[in-house]
Length: 136
Picture 1 (spheres, rainbow, N blue to C red):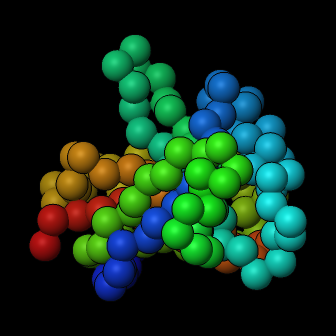
Picture 2 (tube, one colour):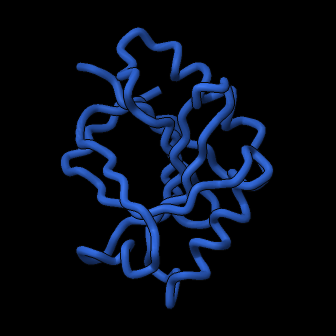
């Protein structure tokens, strides 16, 4: 596992998946459907535990301009700058089963920031960076 220093906050807007994991794909399709084009857009998946012991999942995209999320009727969220543990999964569409166990390993790190999300940073069609924020 490597570390990555996110130098600036990321302002995102999102659609929450109705269920996890079965509703994740629909949430991304709904989000993509709001945009005039997905060309050049940066997508993220944000997840955390809810009070019932399940997982809340947000399909998110980087805001291109102030107020873009509101224009589409979406809520905003900010991924805070800082130091993150990072693990790359290549050919993620054929390796989805690696995502959960990889996050579990990352979440066991003693430096974990307990208030942060598990973040999937989608880079192109075949690569995803899994990230969790740590305290330096």
